[in-house]
Length: 313
Image (cartoon, rainbow, N blue to C red; front, side):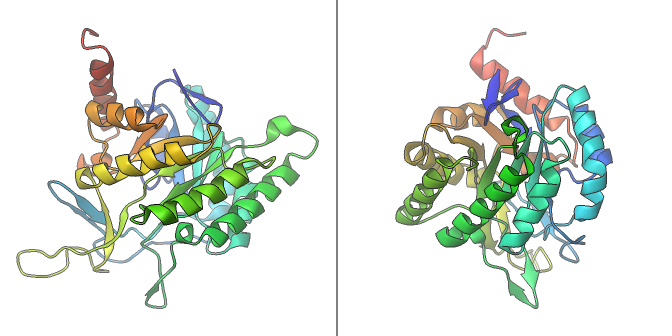
C-alpha cells in the first residue's frame, strides 16, 4: 500500500496527465490496473490542441506536441462527479491535472474541480507544447515568482471553498519540467518548501514533464510532428527524471511527496524511481506506444511486483 499526499494508493503505478480526458476514458482506466486515475490537463476553454500530426513514437524516445486538447471547464464541471464515482467504485482515487493561462485561471479551475469530489489536484506548470499567435507560451515552473503566485491563488481558493470544514480541503501538487540548472531547481524547491508550510500549500511534486523543444526529422528530412518542436519523453528521459526526483527528495520538506515520471515502461523503472525517492510513478509514453491500451499498466505493475518479490505468482 502506498500513499500520495495522504491519499491511499493500492500500489505506486498511475497513468500520467494527457492520457485520460473523458468519461469514457475514465471508464476504461477504472477497469485497468492503475492505482489512481489522472484526468486532464484541463483548461478553462475547450481546446482542440495542436493541428496535424502531434505524436511520433521512437525506439528509445518519443516526442509529442499535443497542445492540451480537452473539453473545457464547463464539460468537466458537469461530468467530473460522475468520473469520481466511477473511479471510486473501482477503488481508485481520481486526480485532476489543471492548466491555466494565467494565475486567475488556475485558481478558478481548481476551485470548480475541488467541488466535484476529486481526491487530488495536480497543477500543470510544465506544458511546453502550447502555442499562441505563433509563439510558445512560457513554461510557468521556470519562473519561481509565477509558481508562487499560482500556488498562492490556488491555495486561497481551496481554503475559501472549504471554509469551516478543513476536511473538505482537496490537497494539490505541482508538475514540473526538467531543470538542467541545479541552482534553479534548488531555488524553485525553496519556494515550494515555503509554500508547503502554509495552511493550503503543495503536498506533492510530479517530476517530470517532457523535455521541451525536441526536434526530429524523418528519412526525407521532414519534421515528424507538424509544429516541428515537441516535448521528448520515453526511455531516454528516464535518467533525467530519476535525477530530478533524487534532487527534489533531498531539497523538499518530508511533508511534500514526489511522483516520478519519465520513461516508465516496466517494473524495473518503477523500482528505480521509488529508490530515488518517489512514492509513486506515472506513465504516458508506454500507454501511447501500445496503441492507447490501458492493459500496459498491468504489465508494468506485474513487472514491479516481480522486482519486489521474485517469488510472487
